[in-house]
Image (cartoon, rainbow, N blue to C red; front, side, top):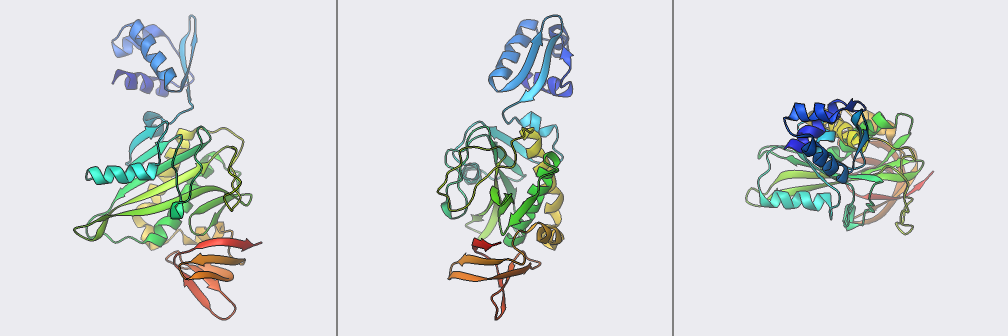
Length: 317
């Protein structure tokens, strides 16, 4: 598409003035067509300045855009972006039900109308202040995956990606799938598997990541403190690419658990008394470690237990 070609030109010459004649010559089209395409790009949220005798200068975009993500992406993800969607995880699973997906894909949205987290809880996903994305990762028929390690690895990778834009922010992890800043949840991770009914084996993983970048009127009745990373504005498209790059760097060897030492360092739970809600009810104790498979090691005073699934509902700091 010529509009994509024009956007690529702007991206390559970001913050530079390009004349209408220069753009028209490079794309072999008329200046009138250039003007129309620039108008279309502006309607899509791209910031383009115009100045007499100078031409046009590309500033950036307030919205997610496939080409803007790709310019910083070094991982083999196909990208789909939306201004608004019901849920990126729901849409990802719909795609998987309609066709066989053989390569990694990511769906990114600026707003979700029905975002959800674990146990179907609502994930507040307002426009312009966050990142809501889901990765589709096909699983080969003979491939074994470790659910505990994939989620803990994703948490570490997400912190790696966020640190590129927020180097001075102290990110902490709350087992198993939450990222905190200043004792407030700023990000959640939801990992779901899609089954191949005939083979009775997962055919794909869908990993959803929701991130509150900037403050908003977060709901007060969530049962946990919700916050945002910072008041500072960042390049959201670059943040997405940074997270995907960090994820794909760890993903091929995630089952080795080599990132678990870093997970322990980032944990906000080690050496603290907690209450954990499990399928058997509430259990309490002191978090002493996380094992090689991402299980939480809990000391209840009489014995230590390795907890594979559950939710930390209370932490005594």
